[in-house]
Length: 321
Image (cartoon, rainbow, N blue to C red; front, side):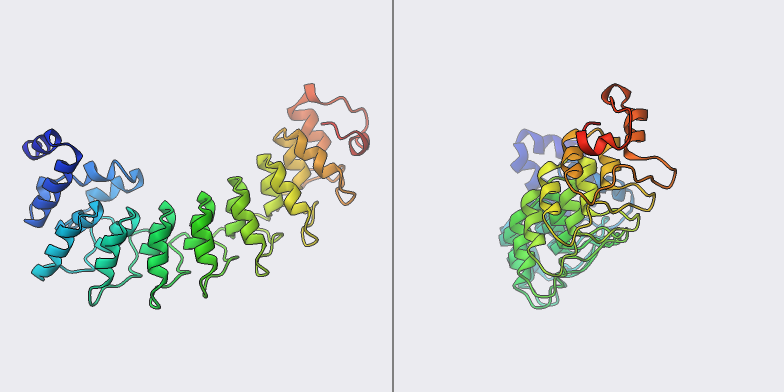
């Protein structure tokens, strides 16, 4: 292996990919290092390399997007077009993950290919393309009627939720335009694409989702946490304003622990968000959580130097924490 990799390194990245594919194509799986490849693109998959499953020539060629080798190997008819490797990924999955549109088209054109075959984490080729923000690949896949556009992985995360969490506006637009995509579908923790977009501060994605009537911006997750609560917790002022501008958002809705958006904003020291929330008459600055702690008591306990309020009610009029 060291001789092969050494020779490849002398030729640069092109040499590494060509020699790796060549050795894999010969069936010399021990002559290439799956770790070497994956270390550059997806650290989370490294542990899968300890599972002895094939990472063959077609996987390798698809990984690098070398069309000539992909086409050549397919013509030999010795390869299972849907064979899964150590991570559970097919050649198509690797091509979509790495954004190789031409390779994706070639693989999709093969008889018997399953465009929905999931990897070990339940992620389909579409989910993998969404994960990396490859809008062109997403568009190619969604042109097929047999592609499930809303298939969740083992965590309940759909392609749309994944794209929203990373802020890929272009991919989100494409997915929202496809029939069969639920824009408000929660994962196993009850979190929706909107809640993920809000947490990461992706205003553009949040606005796209809020344009859809099916999206319920005040729907809590399994912990009772709403999108506004998340925005307040992370100090995303503009998103707080956007959400407060909707009539279907309760500005004082507590989580399962009784903490309101104001409580969490105070606890996290997000003073500007606190002032915005205190501008709403529906917000009660004296509302206690399940442990009897009010927003002001959080401020006094965690940030004593920031508090100069002798009476709780003064908070409502001064807006200071």
